[in-house]
Every structure is written in C-alpha cells, then in structure tokens.
Image 1 (cartoon, one colour):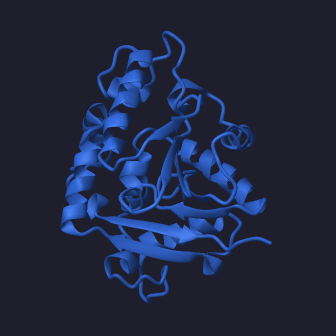
Image 2 (spheres, rainbow, N blue to C red):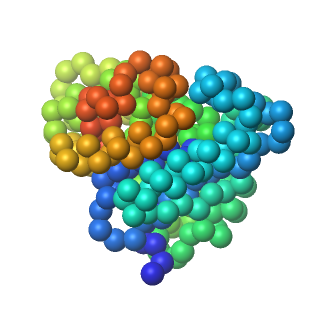
Length: 249
C-alpha cells in the first residue's frame, strides 16, 4: 500500500524526535531522510567530532543503522536521499533540488509533514521546509511540525503547556510563543490560517518514544550536551506540535 503520510526528516533522528505520535499511529507512514548522503573521505564535521566520531563515512553508516532500529520500534521504514548534512558543506542546499528528489519518493495525495524550522532555525531544516512549501504551492497537503529539540531553545509556549490547543491565542507574555509565531510568519502562510494541534504524549507513549530516541546511541550525548537536558525529560520531548497549512486550489 502506498504511504498516505510522509514525514520529511532533515536528519536521521528528526522524525522520531518530533513526530512519534504520528509514527505510532494507524495507517501507512513513510519517513524520508533528506540529508542522508555519505560524505567524501576526510570530511569529518563538527557534529561528528562532538559525537566522538573519527570517520565521517562510518559515522553516517552507523546513523543509518541506528535509524533503521529506531523506526522499526514503530514498524516504520525510511527512504534516504543523497544530500549532504550541513556539517559537510559550506553552501546552503537549494530547496529546488530537494523538491526534484522528493518527486521520486512521494505519491499523489500523500500528506506531507515537514519541519517548521523553529527555535535556532537549523539551515538544513529551513531548506526542507522551503521544499515542502514549494510542494504546498503546487497543491500538496502539508503540515509543519515543531522540530525538537531545536524548537524549544526558549522552552515551550504557554499555550502548549496549558493544553489550550489554540495555536497561541492565550493572553499575557509568552516569549516562546511569540518567537514561534514570528518564525511561522516567515513561511509566507498567515499563522491564523494554520490549524495547530498539540499532543501531550501519554506516559506509555512517551516511554516508547524515549526508547526509540535512545536507539540513536551515537547522538544521545551530543544532543544532551548541546540542548542541556536529558532526552528522557518529558518537558523536552513529551509534547509534539504541528500546523496544517490551508489547502490551495
């Protein structure tokens, strides 16, 4: 059966970190890892060094296997595209090239989930978001997801923690929510036309998600070092948020 939902994951772990509720749901779901290309010899990146790797090619191959094991916990699989992670290149990745590559992985009518590129606005996430927005402009059904843990460098917006589910209409100061709204406006789609959904993962689901996240063994220590929190902390990964964009045409 063709997948009815496709999660665009910039790197090997992003779909599990940000979309476990979707991965564990009923129905067909395919993950597309965009920046999954094996770098040339000698191209050891800064993140590889932080993770203690000494060979970039071996590090990518190990991450592919980690991703296979993690996704298997949700009975899912991934397609890997050949683009290089930003740590292995200087120039930004052209979104149009990603769109062309995605045409070979997508089926007509698939619902696409892409990173919203929130928080620290990782440039790989921004490139994948731009590709998804280009497909949206062509009529694709696209949702943006809060890409964790990048999205929560300022913490969670109050409307998420309070369970309002209103996408940020609660009153009072909310710096994290205001930053999200500003960054979402950069998509060119009015935030008031996006349909926001926030999920608080039940304890059992959160435990399953943590088990999948920990399957990315080479990434746990650097992620915790950079973001300053345990990946097992429910306040870091216990919520998931997405915004469905209005259909065009």
